Amino acid sequence: MSQKQLKEAFISNLNGTSLLEISAGLSLAPLCLLCRGLLLILYYLHHGKPVSSRKYSLLLDFLVLVSPLLFSCTVLSPIIFFMPVILAAFCAGIFSKIYSQRKREARAPFGQIVKEFQKTYLDPEYIPAVTVFRVYVNVLTSISILAVDFPQYPRRYAKAETYGTGVMDLGVGAFIFGNALVCPEVRQKSYMTQPRFSNLARQMFSVWPLISLGVGRLLSVKSIEYHEHTSEYGVHWNFFFTLAFVRLAASVLLAIFPKHKAWLVALALAVLYQLLLSTTSLKVFILHGSDGRDSRLGFLDANREGLLSLLGYLAIYLASVQVGLWLLQRRASVRGWLEALRGLALAVLVLFVLLQLCQACTEPVSRRVANLPFCTWVLAHCLLLLSLFVLTDLTLVFTKLLVKGSSVPCCWKVVQPPDSSKKHGMGAVPVGREDKLSRLCLISAINKNQLLFFLLANVMTGAVNILIDTIHSKAAFTLCILHLYMFFNCLIMYVLHARNIVLKFW
Image 1 (cartoon, rainbow, N blue to C red):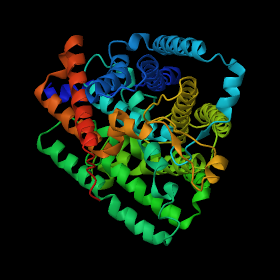
Image 2: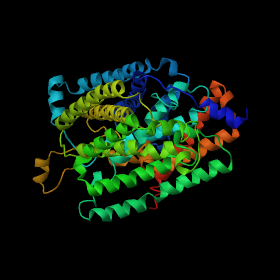
Image 3: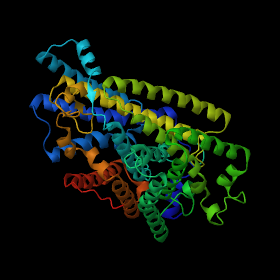
Image 4: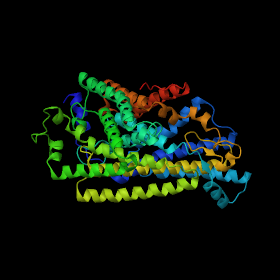
């Protein structure tokens, strides 16, 4: 077999892993975020000032926010169920140290602290969990697209061939979910003041970079005979095209139907598509081609997975728009967000129950056809991850109240109560140094140039695969390559952010 055939076989015919293992892995990112925040608060407690060095800030962020995820999906994957426990215990130890030292300074009863916490007002214009969710999906995807070509990355984490739940299968759906959370229809800035179809024209223009990247990837892959998994999207299709066309189709539907009914449109679309899969020969066509022998004749047949799975991804996108609209409802206090967190937990529970029912009544999860169980699974796990990030942010807000003057970048800003602000003729005023610290934050840096980060990850993944025999790499070499690859990408984002450069030209 040629090197190309070996690499294609290495990522083919896989079956995924369990929902429990994916849930355990998802909990690592919020725990890393919590650990980073607690360490910054502890540093402030000891030194009376935040970390001011850009060099040390980048090093801390990379070692705490990114490096544990690299280890967890490679050499530490056999103990993935123990890692959340270890990280949680470490966070608990840091919190205990902060709380005990704070009590010596001001001995307030714990109950009084909790009451003060519940009454705390937060900046209603910024929801850090959404930003962190989108950044971490990008980071995890960037890690996986290169790590999957190394033997240390468990095969069960890679994309399943037909049925199954791999970590990378979830990453595809999570990317769609994250994009929908911040789409123009959710942000409502120009959407409310301009005609609906005027916004549609703007959306058509805004997706041209994705289409250009899709064409660029197609030409580069074909020209250098780069290894590819044809059953993922087809012969010519790729994920950039999927992102672009889902955004366009969603904009059309949201221009026709009321956006606050997006969940109904999503449900109708997902159910109708599943009925077509179950009652017609559509599923056989997607899995086996027009002649039943995996033919690739004609554009539709050659790209059947990518084209027909658009219906499932569109359903995920529309449902995610509804989630974004719900999240942006004005909640001024911690108490309001605790109630929202209970709502998210209930939604996660309901979706996991529906997932079991869907699989029992129809078929297992399949990213390849983007069926109803796949849509339900993606929404359930994305809401679970989003809930964990909200919980992390609230925990950091509570800890910041223990240490007055401390601040954590990409965390909720504590603001003055609206009543007290009105007395001075002004709106809610942020308390703390979050704005200055955001320039020292890797999450803010990646968030400013997310598409560039993803593009660089794809380009560097291709370069590494061309230059290195990844399949036969040893563990130490694999870890070095993955760390260099992620650090270089993060460093570029960090430098651009420090210079306030945003490479967005559409």
